[in-house]
Image (cartoon, rainbow, N blue to C red; front, side, top):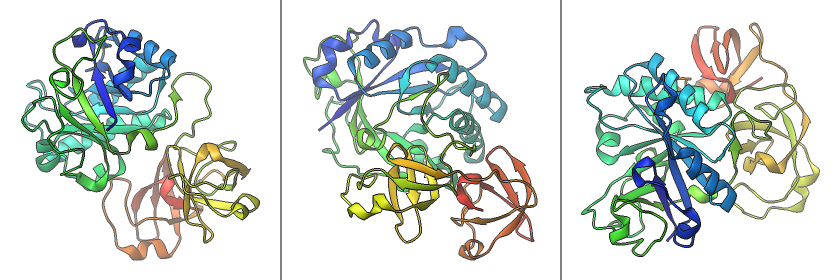
Length: 352
């Protein structure tokens, strides 16, 4: 069982070299709230530097205090400032109760989450949501949450062991890749771990996190990660590409002939690109060679939805994917289609 720990300044000054043999990865708090660089976690720079130098897979998380979309965008800016220059695989938005926020409605919680995640994704960094099981059952219920990777907390008896026996007993939207099972890992699953001075230590069981987020992303420096908005020299939905390896995103070996043909990108999410023309298989973007870049989508052009899901995550009639519509508004990766549809879509959910 692979265990990922999450740490912050509350753990004190950690020595990840001493802890490395017992862990498979680290998720470090980078920041909380907004508006003040003093709210960057005091140990994040040390924790991130150690993980990067030791080759330990690193994620980050930002603790949410936002009460509306505008504040959530400011939180995203602070989180990006904190992680700038470090290799991070995914950045989580930690959503849990705070007296400052009060009792958020489900609608407001989604509005806040989307504002934060849109900013992080626009910067080219994969993003996810952290919350406990109760919040996923009662508050984080909007369909839009299905587009993000999820990190679920359920401690059971909190005895330091995974009371779910390494199996997910609850998986909202089918997107849970980490189960945080205890805040007292040193009493159980990580008994005897060195390098962590605090008594408390959160630990999570890996349910596909290491495999899914196998690539490092660096904000604020030149990188080969693919951003969500298309450009003329980067792979985007509509680009023509050729696989350089006959291996799928999930590690399945394919016929060698797939490396000799060009395919259109029909879906793109982070480092995962689905190729069409009958192949309909996902590949790592890093395993694709760009043949022809997509043209920029502009007002007046025609575009066809790939999935019957709106920009806000609302499910639509499947028939919307059967025809093309005129683009009537373009704002970043938000594209509004007209011709009676008058609905916004993510540009990565369109072919044109």
